Image (tube, rainbow, N blue to C red; front, side):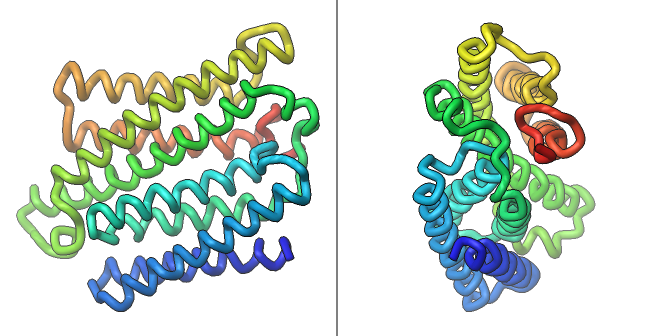
Length: 274
């Protein structure tokens, strides 16, 4: 059953992504509703898979990187669904749905892997706090990234005075900037909690507060610095709009590099190669 769901869920998400893209290209209410329905259907199936995974393994599916990626995709759908419902706009779905598809497809390939002995992890509440905080942080950063990219595209049309494709399809610049700022703030808060929890967890396991040879930890710290600079620039220097959008794009690109790409090419506890 799990194998069947691991194949069906990415296909459902991919179909939703195609319809969101079609709706973005040409606004059609029926296509938009179908896209939302497929995304919700994929999420329901995804929920069933995570439930079966938890039952079969005896633990919450956050104990290795593929499980974390899948849970991250699952939460991302919830966050996006809230935004779609509250803004009555499906434009962000054209980028969010492909991200969800790729995350879960990538996770499904490695679902059989166990990177760290589960009995060691399940004893630590710090580990659970570390994982859940980072999942929420990365989800928020992805939303910030999507809104920033759309902001840049829309701003380009406005500055060149060629109001066409993006102007007709995207929310106002102010709305996109607000989504960027709120999502970045939310993500930074949880990344901070995640870093603190990971330090406490490492101290509990190894007797030290940081593992400098762990690429994912070092990358997360760099991402924290970038988003701290982003929020400081918004609060102190009054950075808004284009500059804030570019900072969000750079920050999330780094997150993509460190989690999970770093895990593929460099050894460590967050590695996909184990």
